Length: 122
Image 1 (cartoon, helix red, strand yellow):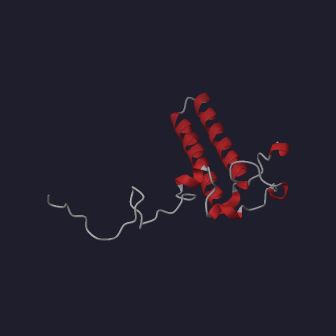
Image 2 (cartoon, rainbow, N blue to C red):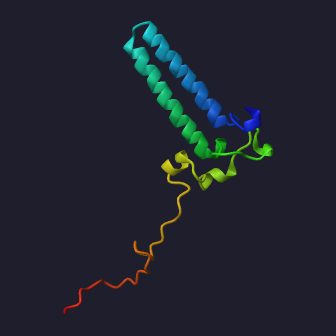
Image 3 (cartoon, rainbow, N blue to C red):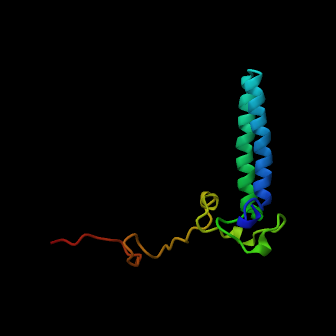
């Protein structure tokens, strides 16, 4: 894992730990034939996804791809998370990493003059 820069984030390990507790709850619910345990475990797994996402957006995750070796530490915070990571689904869902929409250019790419469009009488 270390050779490929995988598993070096606080967000990843925290999400993994919470999801493991949820999966154990689901398993115990199945073994005990208890629907409440199964649904409770599923809810914990859903919470793990949200916690991981929030930690990623707070800078405790990492962008897709490799990072320099100096940034592999578990306690190294990603300062670029605020702008959003290119190609990151989590950042896109949060509205980060998208180019700003220009209000002075119309859909066709022509500048908008601010004057109303009128049809010319022929």
